[in-house]
Amino acid sequence: MNERARCMRRVQTLDFALIETGLFLDSHPDDQAAMEYYHRLRDARTQAVSAYEEAFGPLTQMGVEGDRWSWVDSPWPWEMED
Amino acid sequence: MWIYEKKLEYPVKIKTPNAESAKVIISQLGGPDGELAASLRYLNQRYTMPWDKTKGMLTDIGTEELAHVEMIGAIVHQLTRCLSVEEIKRAGFDQYFTDHTTGVYPASAAGVPFTAAYLEVKGDPLADLHEDLAAEQKARVTYDNLLRLIDDPDVKDPLRFLREREIVHFQRFGEAKRTRWRVTKRAAEQNSRKSSKMVACGCLTLKSMVMGAHPLTAIVFRFPQCGHPSSERSCHSVRQSKGRA
Amino acid sequence: MNRMYSGGACGCQSAGRPQMGGQTMCRPRGDGQTVTCQPTLGPSPELSLAMAYVPLQRWEALYEPEEGLRRGTMFQMLDMPWTVAGGGGCR
Image (tube, rainbow over all chains, first blue to last red):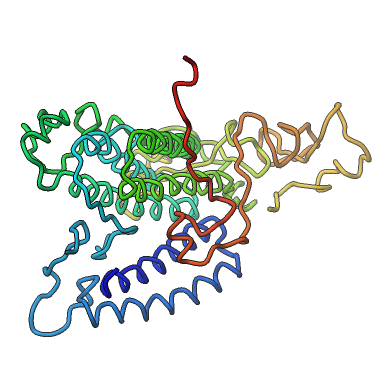
């Protein structure tokens, strides 16, 4: 796994945990343990996204920096990285 | 609204193209129990759900299903890379290829184009949530069948992930069905005085349900379909001008 | 969860024993105003007939996030993987 893939995997891991926690909270909105987990994970996720975007480019349009629209750059998610 | 994140929910890295596998996996994109049907079903059902938790659940699961639509698209795209004409013919992929080349077109494994007839939005919370429970089981079965048919571990891996999501979604819809609308006594008293007559602006109020009644016997819903904030006042004024129902 | 008319609000509990051969609970009459002690609609006030129920999951037994992503769920109790079936068994 190259560095980009490793960094992407970290974001996917934390995002998935947040999606799963969010679905649980949809039917258990007052669950304190779940809320605490959500907050902890969200902080870790913010850092992982920053690390990825700094090295490899934006994950959302809001993550574009500099003087060109790097949003359009490859690879797009469905493409094989070679 | 939706923001796009430039990543897949779960990685898809398929080293070996295989048109035969693509032919069947496409059903989870455009087939009767596929991810596109799921996302449109849930996202359209949420408008007539009376409970906040269920609105949230349908929004979030519907959104996740869009991510699954993308994963299936990625799988089919990677399976149909660099195919030779011989490979296309041998795999029986020639009919799809004729109409779509190696484009990703939402259709079933049998070649039937996607249709909204695959989903239901009944506008009744109980019916809709039961529809969703059934949809998740049917999607799970479809993934079971794909896992039986396909050998490549690169393909099986994301399919296993998607199958497990169906099981989790089933649990969530089951929990959403447990939601009760906490009717205050005052609201119940107000509702019970309203008539069940359809009024000119489309507002429909049924007899009230108070806690303890079986959900199937008497249900309180207000359907302001007039599309403007004063819809409830419009209903009242129409009802009054027509006389007490 | 609390029900508006549960327990002894209408005197069901104070009667001492279930009436009419089964569980009872305080339920409203047709006018929506009066509440009387009537039979429940199923095995218990929480389980009506003609309804399907899924138990409420608890927040417990989580995988680490990496394992959760691999398995497709963070919750060990919802992890129900597909196992290979041989097929052709009826011939």
